[in-house]
Length: 138
Ligand code: ATP
Ligand code: MG
Image 1 (cartoon, rainbow, N blue to C red):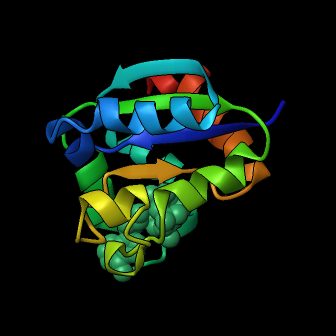
Image 2 (cartoon, rainbow, N blue to C red; image 1 turned 30 degrees about the horizontal axis):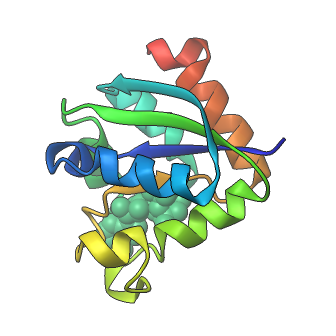
């Protein structure tokens, strides 16, 4: 069955939104098959977002993700979970996220948008390996 990598970012953890996010995925019918709290190193954050390293916000993004506050790293499984997970999360900029989406309900800043979800099958594979494989210890 299809799997995706979902992570609650430091602001989501700090704001106590972990339970709400998990409940949405559970109630939708998805299965939680991996879960851990991890304060990512700079190296792990850089590898996770390596496709964005040329962007002007990359350094700030890495700093935010590796701030020391735990990220809740999860693997969710079920039908079409990659695409559905992205739809449940909402647009990257919360000001453009549908009001019923996770970002659309809980945030207003693109640099503090609570949650990450893999955007395609290849990204899901890469991210699950990164966070739950050996590199997850970086
Ligand atoms: P994520 O990968 O975290 O799920 P996304 O796929 O919706 O988010 P990406 O384009 O992969 O969006 O960007 C990764 C993250 O970088 C965004 O979630 C956001 O926190 C940050 N980001 C993206 N664009 C900007 C921007 N213009 N200014 C500041 N931060 C940004
Ligand atoms: Mg992305």
